[in-house]
View 1 (tube, rainbow, N blue to C red):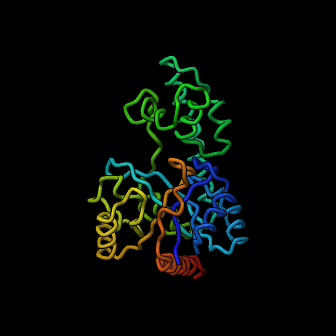
View 2: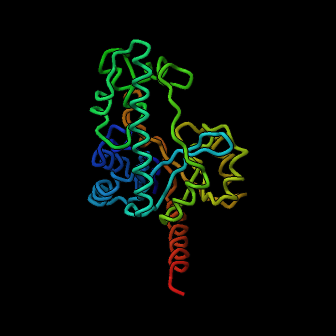
Length: 283
């Protein structure tokens, strides 16, 4: 039995609807999946319903961009309360900042003569959490670029004309917010961060786990991070990081995480919520 715990839909920068993603999950016979859209939980209700209809266990989640000691990192949240008031309030702020970033990216492209309108990007995104991939798709639609990869290479990567830094909360703040919402905080795709020396300090701040399995992680990475997780007593997760089609096929199905890791996540989340209930009870 296997799971994929890192998936995106069109509620952020993925291309699949929750129903389409659940259908792919069923095709690969996943026992459980998690939705981890960027800075939003708006797709969780539909994904939960679509998974239930297909007999798949659903884990509500999200992916937050954080900063620690000058490094940009991504933190995955699992088993969060998707209706938690503070979580929703802070995500609304993150989404507003994302929308403002799109406007700034387009303005920078306009400065170098690229005739793109922010309205075109928002029309493609059709969500509250737009990102650079939506700008890339708009550039392809306008026939300025032949592919999203080209758009990133020419305009959207760091040190390119359209680059605008992303809003990043502190890692400590993100971990605290996730815990308050009853969820677990897991460091996403650490091999891409090139900041392994930060994992132990993050664990001291309350980080709950490491994403050991990922499409950009080789066998060596999986072994290294699994051993590190064992040493630091952190949970192990993983997923495809599927955003839709990639080189003619969906990434979902490329990573299969043993289901035992979902069970351990669930147990840890239940323990956390038990502690929260006790601490909030009248004395």
